[in-house]
Image 1 (cartoon, rainbow, N blue to C red):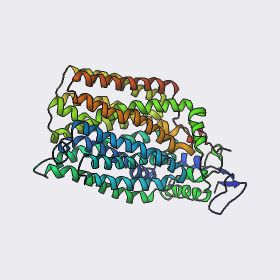
Image 2: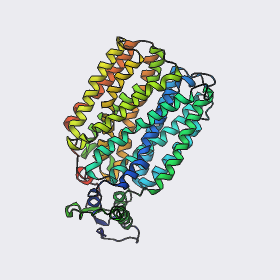
Image 3: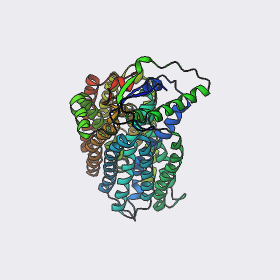
Image 4: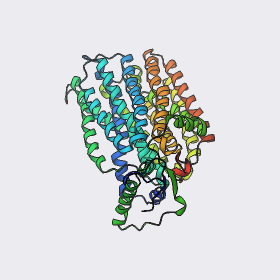
Length: 490
């Protein structure tokens, strides 16, 4: 045990507030090679993004069925349902983000997943527009809470050398869920397979069933040792890290000794006052706050505005039947997943700042081009979808890097709440307004008006490119404690 407590000892299981913990937990975790344990963390926690992609795609690709009786959604109702989900995600992120920093990561990622699976199953039982939107709100609240608890947990368990590409691939796995949702919509909207009036209900009920499987997988994930040490659970933190190390030594891996320079002294606190959170975000870390806001707002508007309403664009401008929309979303999802996979390593080798500037900037340029091709009606539905596939190859990596940036550039004590705050503001400004705005633009039937919406998204991405490239943090290969010193550092 390389962790000791100075000052008032407290109980055997928890150090007293004000005690100083001298620990090498960060160094022990960062020296670990990539192994089976990390794969388990990725699968059990990262699958949240698969669920989110499934939810978003189902809602978008099932538009055709929802516009039929008994639901009879209008195009405005489609945008309202999408915004209800996002408002729920914002609410859940803030509320659960505060709790995640206060009572721990592990408790919260069980609570939020339970809320998700109950609410998404209830969506399949909704009877009108109002009930559908209410259940979508609570589904979003579960997913928003998942983002905060899980992003912080993954950051704190994955070695520094792999933190960038791991985070990008996990966030990019959203598109595995999107592809799954597209395929489910294709099958469940075929009249010869199931009555379309019931098919969309089965799709949402299936999402709830998947959530049950994930609950089982998460039993094996430990609490974040970094969180435990900061909150005085010193012995438990050491037990967790020792258990992780044992997984490697049992597999025949010889671990190097921890870097003696990686010791951290932390003054124990059981919670962080909101006044200190505000001071950190808007005074001592104001540069990181500006960068995080620009990245989050840009990618939230870009993604939610375009993807949530793409089914409407296909139906309105290209006359694609609702039951065929899934075929067009599949390549869309493929390009978006391949982007983080192909570019993720570059965020750890070339670096965060140049890659953020490049992915956001190229996405803005390509969005203008894709929007112009749409304006002049240069392609049919297949050609336009291929263009969007290319755009989202880069945009997906950019969007994932926003979550990476926010998660690693704020102190441990407020990491989850910082993720929640930026997710909430970004989604509130860009995500909630985007689908409503684009829903109205599509409903107008004017390609010119829709093109203006694309231009707005491009401007936001271009601003984020400049801000991230100039003021972003070069966090590649560095310990979280080096990137952002804990507030409780003694």
